[in-house]
Image 1 (cartoon, rainbow, N blue to C red):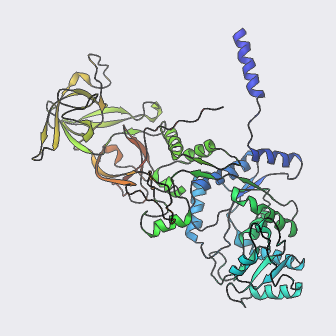
Image 2: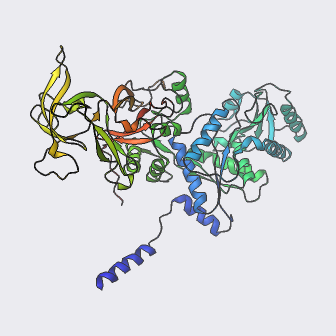
Image 3: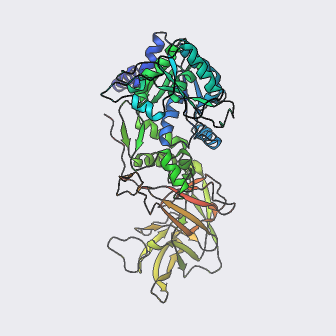
Amino acid sequence: MGETNSRSAASEEEKAAPVSRNFIEEMIDKDLAEGRYKEVCTRFPPEPNGYLHIGHAKSILLNYGIAKEYGGKFHLRFDDTNPTKEKNEFVESIERDVAWLGAKHDGPVLFASNYFDTMYEKAVLLIKKGLAYVSDLSADEIREYRGTLTEPGREDPGRNRSVEENLTLFTEMKDGKFADGEKVLRAKIDMASSNINMRDPVIYRIAHLTHQNTGDKWCIYPMYDFAHPIEDAIEGITHSLCTLEFEDHRPLYNWVVENTDWENPPRQIEFAKMYLNNVVTGKRYIKKLVQDGIVDGWDDPRLVSIAGLRRRGYTPESIKMFVELSGISKANSVSDPAMLEYCIREDLKMKRPRMMAVLHPLKLIIDNYPEGQTEMLDADNNLENPELGKRQIPFERELYINEDDFMENPVPKYKRLYPGNEVRLMHAYFVKCVGCDKDENGHVTAVHVTYDPETKAGTGFTGRKVKGTIHWVPAKESFRATVRLYNSLIDPDKSVYNEDGSLNINPNSVEIIDNAMLEPALKDAKAYDSFQFVRDGYYCVDCKDSKEGAPVFNRIVTLKSSFKLPKKQ
């Protein structure tokens, strides 16, 4: 009775325990309680100028998760205000990545460029209010006039133009009467502000370029800091969640929405980015790697782009786990890629079948096994998950084992095959090494063993024990495949960047094995199918280079790691 009461009390205590809330949730709770907003609406607003990477996954899942947690809405919107770098290829890749991560946006995909008319109207409104003016200064001159962190800026010569003159000039900018860079529109705020972002920032520039969404309709384009808050306001975004580098831009964000007359304007909240050690995430660096042929595209499995991680074999669940373990905070921190590897192992270990693959094949001949005979052996697909069922593997007189599973002169504590030693062949029999064949150079070409038919796996044999178990594939029934072993793209013994800004590329970032021998059940594997190769690691069928009946396998991650989750405080 006492034990029952204590369990009940513990249960009540658990129910009463406060739910841990991150600082963003606390701020949203307060906004809702005070009636600032009636519902929550968030967005993920990428610029379509490259592929997304693991850091973007944090932003996607945070914005989507917050919207769902509060029963609100989540938007996917492209901040396509810079036609110099944007492509439809990037739009399509981002849509794929967001959908793959499971972040379902409400309504259609949105584009900042769809709001260009409204942005233009709001710029005209600022001019009429005396809060924006046309400048004749060049980009270098504007930078010079802006001042420094210790010195205030100087007034632009065009700062005191009349409203009428500014309206005329801005209209002429829109009508294409000026060349690129000849004029800009600046917000009129405070050239002495301690925040340089508030020193009359440029809000429109001229660019005679064809836009991927609006074509040639416009030759003036809004700057990000002006466009972004207006996009949020148009869509009814309540909480504009962005990374810490935008913290200094928040006063300008607020200034724009306050002075362009919006009811219930959105609120910007910043959180820390997710950094990883020894990886490349910068778009310009990845673009150069692609252009130089160091990687085979934005989805190269050595990259931490979302497309690259997907191609390598990472799952949405593993990335979600990684984001959750990294946490949400206001302080920048760096995560170890080993934690990401831990997450994929945890996700796959109960879900995927454990298959046999011999990466460096060595012929094994069972001298006393009947020639020409083949028997089918039962194998559990995953001992820890019986729901994955069983499969049958053909067993023959000649097999392949890994080269390192035999040593003619074994080192101390070696438990695999060597002359006179007995091991178990996985799912099969005990075999005892009786010798080996060598070529004229002394290289071992085949290992000879005898088997004990009484020791068949699954028969309950207990007559004796062996210390080693090795895997194998049948020589006739197996098939040859290409297997790629990936390592860090960056030299692990160096920092990511050299002093000149170049990357320290690891010359051994990938090992390609063309003669791996795999058990026959793997031959029909399809793109993105993943498996555990026993005693080695997790592998995924490559989506680009595989062909029907000839899959190419990418190693996702090895089986073992020294990484351990930190203990909860």
